[in-house]
Amino acid sequence: AKTIHKICCVVAVVGVTCVFPIDLAKTRLQNQRSGQQIYKNMMDCLIKTVRSEGYFGMYRGAAVNLTLVTPEKAIKLAANDFFRHQLSKDGSKLTVFKEMLAGCCAGMCQVTITTPMEMLKIQMQDAGRIAAQQRVMPSVVTTLKMGGTSAVLCRSYNASPAPVMRLSATQITRELLKTKGFFGLYKGLGATLMRDIPFSVVYFPLFAHLHQLGQPSPEGSVPFYWSFMSGCLAGCVAAVTVSPCDVIKTRLQSLKKGANEETYNGIVDCVRNILKKEGPGALLKGASCRALVIAPLFGIAQVVYFVGVGEILLGYTPHNIYSS
Picture (cartoon, rainbow, N blue to C red):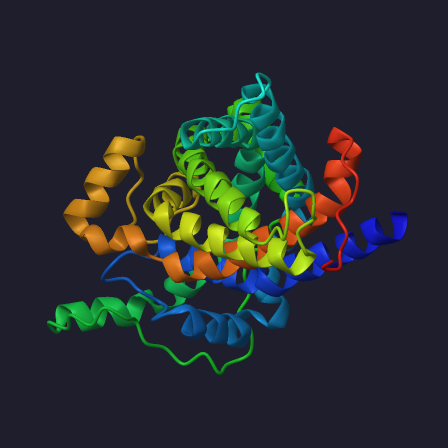
């Protein structure tokens, strides 16, 4: 079992490392305003990031994610199983409503880790976008004065990497604690709950039913690859479903704004301003990136959980990783 745990941990770290650049692109795409766009799409964002900030520019904030994503996913999955067990103590089969309720409770538990993790990560990820916007703003002003309406700002990114303010998670944490106190780390908590509770309500019942389809018999175990595929599909559907909430959360948690970017006074004000100035489509910015990030992460998380974390936290025995 120890060997399996080590393998799963390595796989989880590799998974996070592989998808993190996509997560960075998601954050930058979500934060850029219509009419002030630096990036056309995910690939354009990644190419320009490498050209202007170097290869490791794609991994800004990765250390925070790698440190906290494991306990975050462990809390989420263990809480869901705990509440499912509590809701089925009478021996009756869980209804879809009870499955959704268990997912809701799991989503509420995980935000204790998720909110500060994403608060720190977003500041580090978005620093490069703000720096890039500041570099191109003079050409934007000229274009606007001449009557140009191009939605994407153009600039050569072939020059040597431009200096971007180096922020560390420790520096940001210290500054937040100094200026806003402990709860400064929980800015955007309401928006995080608004995203993570519906996500869990959609994800866990869908995963449970998909996972059950791979069980050859009531007593048989589900092959690990089926757990992975079930996690990927359920994660993808849930991620796209709550994408508008993720855009709102990202905007609210971003402390430093680019030129002419407004500050929002809560969730309602954020939604109102986005709809008024950018249209409904802005609420789906980065949706494909989010699906590409969440799907493999939850596929990996489910495999890791079933053969490792679940055994430790809830007394599970590891599932047979081979189909019977």
